[in-house]
Each structure stands twice: as structure tokens, then as C-alpha cells.
Image (cartoon, rainbow, N blue to C red; front, side, top):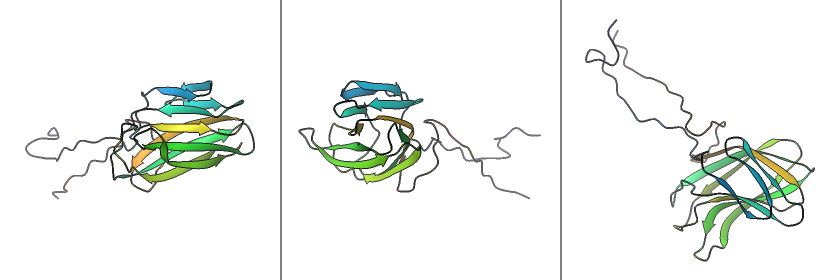
Length: 168
């Protein structure tokens, strides 16, 4: 048969990228506290033994005025723990002005937060603050455009669907 694409069988070629916008090669850093380990590919473990402990993912690919959905799996070492998710919406002095507290149990579950990135600041990061004295493990972190969460896919994962004209 004729190779495709070819002049006899033209196809439109589009740039395709995965829906998970959170680059899993970005480092995870400790901001407050002492016990933060792991990475975005394999999961982050945060332990608060005496004071709030924060893990930070820097350089989130967000744009002012756009709506995003952040979703992740989380499990706690205790029956009920609070985690504050700071989505990097801060004023010029670095004070958080947009954050959400989620409850995490000792049964792994999917958490979802929808937000509109509101201000143009240099603080485009994602913080997970463990407020309870507990160990929290966070995995399968996904940031995507829009308000509808979709099943987790790793960063860069692309599913291709080729659509062509049926000429018969």
C-alpha cells in the first residue's frame, strides 16, 4: 500500500501534548519543617511531628484568568488529618491569598480542587502544608486546564487518535 501520509492520502498533522500540565521532573522542596521526601513521579511523603511541614513544587505552568483542576491521591497515617493546598496565588509580599484545606484519611482517596489563577505574581508554585501531626503521602498529582477532573496520566503521556476522511 501507499505510505501514509502521502499526497494521495493527505492528513492534518497537529501538535499533541498530554493533559497533565505538571512537569514531574520539577523538584519538590521543603519550605517549612524537616521531613519532606520523594518526587512527583513516585509520590511525596510529608511528616509533621511537631510543626506544620510544607512541600513545594515550583514553577507551575499557570496563566492569569484561566481555570484549572488540581487532583491527587492522598493517604494519612492517622484517621483524619488536614492538608492545606496553596495554589501559589499570593500577594506581592508572599502572603497566601488563595488556598484550600482538604481532609485526608487513612484510606487512600482522590482529592480535587478547581481554581482560577487570579493574580500575576512571581509565586507560581504549589504547596502542600501538613497541619496535623501525621505523615501524608501524596501521589498521582495532576494539573489540567478546565473544571472537569479526568483520570490521572503521567506528565507527557499522550494518547493519539487519528481521524481521517473516509473516501469510500
